[in-house]
Amino acid sequence: MSPRPDPPEVDRIAAGRAAVAARQARAAVKNAIASRSRSALDAAQVGWADASSAEAGMRVRELLTSIPGLGPTRVAKTLADLEISDKKRVGGLGNRQRVKLHDYLQRREGDAPAHLVVLAGPTAVGKGTVSGYIRDNYPDVHISVSATTRSPRPGEVDGVHYYFVDDAEFDRKIAAGELLEWATVHNSYRYGTPRPPIDLALQEGRSVLLEIDLQGARLVRAAMPEARLVFLLPPTWEELVRRLIGRGTESPAEQQRRLATARVELAAQDEFDYKVVNHEVSQAAQEVVDLMAVSAPYSA
Image (cartoon, rainbow, N blue to C red; front, side):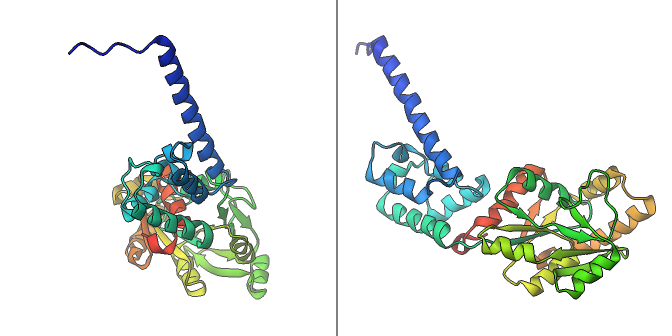
């Protein structure tokens, strides 16, 4: 058999331009979904109606990843739940798969409520770093700002990291019923969670992240049983010790006291709904954000 002749140069150029145009069209669809100017369900329905459309040529994985708050970890689990291959394109789905994807997107986009997610864990595990990463990289998430009677640490900003108040103001908030929970931490300072901003954000359909200690998480569970409690774990105990000592913000005696407290806190991890290991900050943050948007039928 003689070798197949190369296509004319003009055909190669035309094919290249068509491929670029197709990629640009798919990117435009993904951007529209990410900006919420278009729903993923609408894109899927267009793909099923027109096999030549950019929507039909998208992989289902691309479609789901475009949805705000739905990261790679949650997408992989959702595809497995829906029994859809990672390589499957929207236009190539069978009828049964189309129905399952349609129902999932309809539930997620139409009925999925906003959630209060409570992030807790032992001292020095990186709760503040993870919540800070979410604050800086996921603007759709409302970060609850706690009130505290302790003084600011270097770099902390009032109203961003905490509301720094004196004991008299803290007492006033308690008396006025403005705190969802409050507690004395490490036998020294008081911390509390202002409730009105949380209620307002949830009413507006925005999920809320509350970074808090173990005592506070238990009080929030009692006050709002629908809250999702996430326990942040260190990769190893040795890594937790290294992080605590390495930050250099406590005296040696205080470090030992906090490590003793951390052992007690780690023993409470099974009280929580989810566990996330803080191997790497961005990945841990993504896993926490994923838990804010997942609808009940496909929860972890």
